[in-house]
Length: 203
Ligand SMILES: C[S@@+](CC[C@H](N)C(=O)[O-])C[C@H]1O[C@@H](n2cnc3c(N)ncnc32)[C@H](O)[C@@H]1O
Image (tube, rainbow, N blue to C red):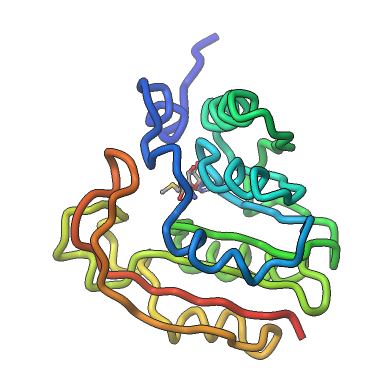
């Protein structure tokens, strides 16, 4: 039988951590909003940099991804840092999250085609408890002219309007912004970047 390795499994098979071993900077700057010992879901956590850091902050974290190779590296990072991390290897498009159980959902650079994006974002909302927070950072359309990472298809890049259409009014908008920043997040995210950020609270 031929074992055809998926794109992300191949990416994560290289030595090192593609997006680094430190958390996404926006997440780190906003995590003070989470309650203590929060139940946090991190869909598409890749090699686990965000999930492991959240676990180090005392949260109860489940990292999800379609890549078993990425999640194995996430578990290795968690073990190295002496923190518990639950992992689930799932395709988010068919994922069925437990409804209304998460204090927070964290999405960084989870760029899906438009039809899938809306479905997955709706699942993320449904996973939140009332009052629960969704924190998201992703590349904006202006990222197409830059070389610090991200998809090269315009419709996979996020505008604030897209995010508001996905999340509001189910979520109350706490923060919505576009920003320019210089990324320093592993070998794959280096240099000037155009970003879209959203934080919402489930009503
Ligand atoms: C650009 S990486 C970002 C990884 C991580 N969020 C971070 O910021 O370090 C995108 C991730 O999305 C995951 N992904 C893409 N489509 C997915 C799907 N349908 N189901 C689950 N994971 C998916 C990939 O496996 C990959 O780990």
